[in-house]
Length: 112
Length: 115
Image (cartoon, rainbow over all chains, first blue to last red; front, side, top):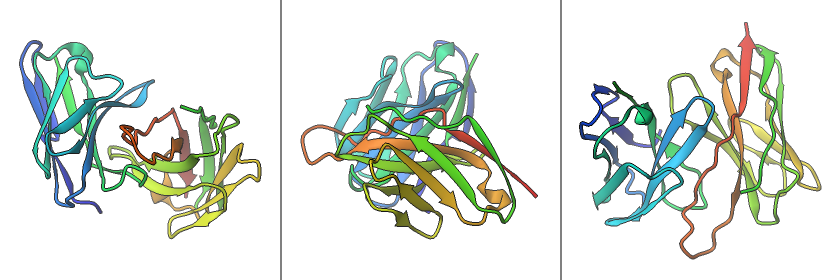
C-alpha cells in the first residue's frame, strides 16, 4: 500500500473555527490531491498540488486553502468552517498525472 | 469530461465470477478507462485501467468493446472482501500543459457478495 497518512482521522468542531487537515506521504510523489465525498455527489476535487509550493484549485475550492512547503506534506485549511463543509476528506497521491492515484483512508469532519 | 453509466447495484455469490458493466458512448480517442473501488470506510482503491486492448492484473480483468463505447470489469472469483462500490472513470491522457490528472467519480455500482 502507498504510504499515505491522513490526520486527524475524525474531528468534530464548531462553525466559524479554523480547521487544518494534514496529508503525509512517504512515497516522494509529485502530485497530491484533496477530495471531499458527500452522499449524492461522489468524490469532488478541492485542490491539488503538482510540486512544492505549486498548487491550484479544483472544482469545489471555495472556502478552502492549501499549502505544500515540502514534498511529503499537503495541508488543507478551512479558514472559518461552515456546516456545509461537513464531509469525508480524502487525500490522494501519484507520481505521474497519467498514472493511478493512491488514496488515504480519509478524515471524517463534522462541523456543528 | 465524458460521462459513464453504471448500474446502481449488482449482487453476486462468493466464488462466482462477476461482470460489472460500464457504458461510455461519448468516449474520446485519448480517454483511458479506469476502474476504482471503495470498500466501506476506506478511500478509493485503484483496480485496473486500459485504452483499447483487454487488460489483466492480479485483481481483475478489463474487457473493452471494439468500439470502446462500453467496458466490463471482471472479477474472476468474487470474495466477501470484494463487496464495495465500483467506479468506472474516463480519464484523458495529459501530454503536457497545466492539466492535473483529475479523477471524476460518478455514483458507481454497489456490489454485494453473498456467502
